[in-house]
Length: 170
Image (tube, rainbow, N blue to C red; front, top):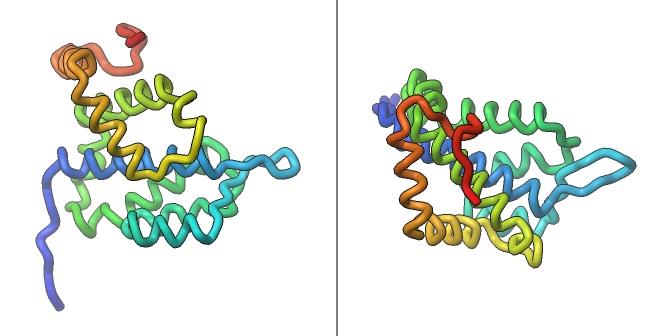
């Protein structure tokens, strides 16, 4: 049996976890439907096929959510289950993901994603954007001088944590 070394890189694990959470948000943004007063994810077969080709590593999460009644708690449980099944102990040593979730980099990345999402919501709502488009838009937005400056303030802010209400972006 082949033994593979598992990564101890907390920063990489953090980036992967953020990407998974962005993907889950993207799925809910475009595929959430109300049926009989219940919110469910409904991903058409052609979209599942496209996800399988473009984000094969994320397809299992799309399949887990597809057809399911969605609540905040259920999404959180499914994302954590996905991360535990596909990353924790397989790609990363078992102690890495908990450290990634507690890292300042993860918290700042998630906060910045939420700022981007909220600020671009009306644009994102105008038409369907593939997940690759979301990732590209986020990368380009992240290069803007004011975004870079704000991110640095968050990272260097010491005890200030994103979402604590101590700073805002307009």
